Amino acid sequence: MADRTARGPWIWPLALAAAGVALLLDNFLLLGDFNLAALWPLVLVAAGAQILLRGDLLASDDARTFGITRGSVQSATLEICAGDIDVQVRALQREGRLIAGQFAAASRPHMRVSDLGAHLKLDRAATPWFSFADWEMALARDLPWQILISAHLGQAKLDLSGLIIGETVVGTGLGDIRVIAPREAFSPLRLRSALGNIHLITPIGCRTRVTVATNWLFRVHADPNRYDQPDTNVYLARDADDNAPLVEVFVSGTFGDAYLT
Image 1 (tube, rainbow, N blue to C red):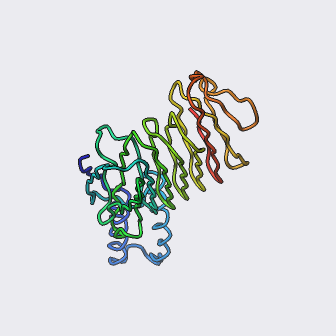
Image 2: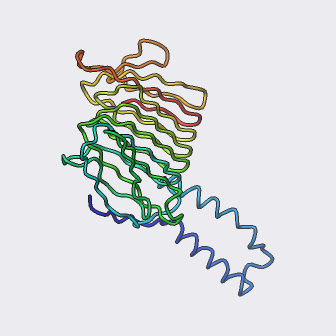
Image 3: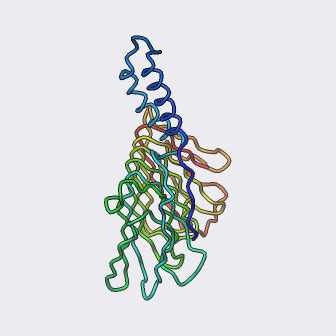
């Protein structure tokens, strides 16, 4: 996977330019008795707007590509503590590798192999604070994966349609979650966002049952052409293959909405 050049945030240059103009006017006494220090809350406004528009506070193209061969590994766990970095996960197109992708500088996956199982971990704490390049992971298709992802200020996008899933748990603080359901999962998928939306897409033919824990600040919007609702907050994918394995998904949140398509 080639390095990706990220476009820098545009709010911060505008904020710096506005601050420079204000300071210049203040130096020439053109602001009268106006207290320039009273404008400091605008820094919080700019930071919040940047997060809402881009999903992260800063942008960086400080990224590296990597690839790890599969060897004799028969099952694997991918554990990601992303912090404020966005994460993308999908299936590998090329056989022979266990995992490949892009990571922020100094956060190359740490791998531990025990018997025929591998445990790979990416930790934001091992990454320089100024490195904000997204983490993009492509996983081997022909072995079961346990995927554990957490982020306090980052988004998670997982295309699991080409993977065998043993277990998946995804949690975000301030950030959206977008998941394409797998065709096979040995354990239920659990998706939770404290402040963000959760989007779940079920491919045609997959048997997916979704249970959503709603509250007055977290609602569910299900496409009636794609889901039946046999019970309160329970949704079954339509047009499913009766012979396909059932995939269970549990969705919950505090502030935001769940979208089932």
